[in-house]
Length: 92
Image (cartoon, rainbow, N blue to C red):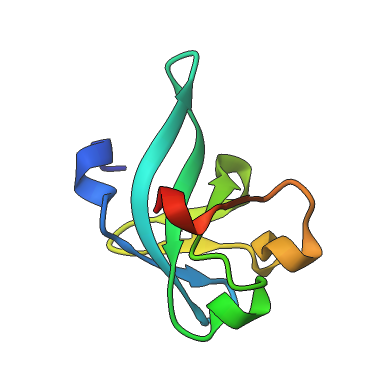
């Protein structure tokens, strides 16, 4: 297993486990020297599904795979999951 640096994944494309494009990684949120979540700039048609928010914070537990791309659970869409934090547009 190859260990990636956080700086290597910033800008990586994010897809759902059903193959839909979700957005790009903007940064990692750390808590106690561990990755707590990922800030994702939402792109494509997903914006309309999440109420127009341009970014979200996805808890790390919803990430299924990290390589050249990120794969997240489809349940991470904020409309279906209260654990997802939407980022106000003025902060993106």
